[in-house]
Image (tube, rainbow, N blue to C red; front, side, top):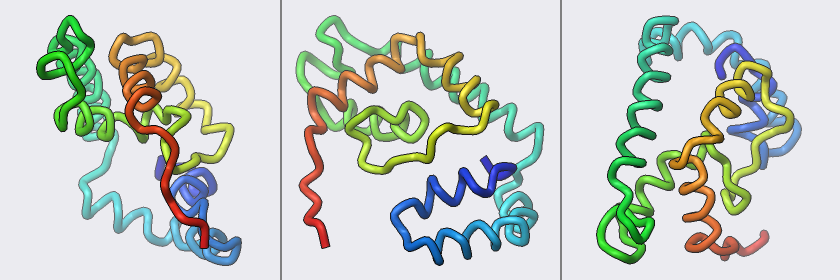
Length: 139
């Protein structure tokens, strides 16, 4: 998402004041090379990340038991962890952080390509059944 500073600012600073979102967006082009270098982000590592995401969905789908959970027949920390790790990509309705809409076309194509997977639907179902509504107290 680094190539999309406006979307990234909305994704990570969406709850901040408009001044902070603006500052975040203005700083991103300056910070982008530093972030890419420090996190070793390039076309090759991005492709590795995409491949690992597919492998993670494969593993999740393989590990799901007959009851629809990863361990036994009830919700466990394993389900919580897996659903939480996939949630920024899947963004189930109960996910507490709103991403700006619409996402960049390339991000949406990636999400569309994955959205038919059993694991994608599992994340949505886990959030629907077990996340509930946020208990956050408005300031």
